[in-house]
Length: 81
Image (tube, rainbow, N blue to C red; front, side):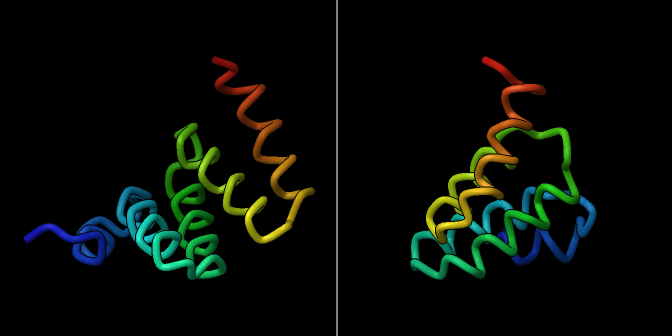
């Protein structure tokens, strides 16, 4: 069965597993853990706009507004639509 944990183990350099683990952590309101997974997802897949968007939103949730701003500026520059 393919789970986010298995995806992380099978493809550690792909950010998808960490993205989905972050989503699960957000649903559980484990915001710091979610941010860590989203940061790893961005590190593994730095050109994926959705990873930057959800990381930015997560920064806003934990009131890290400068980091939120940095992610939104990245999106404006790299994925303006």
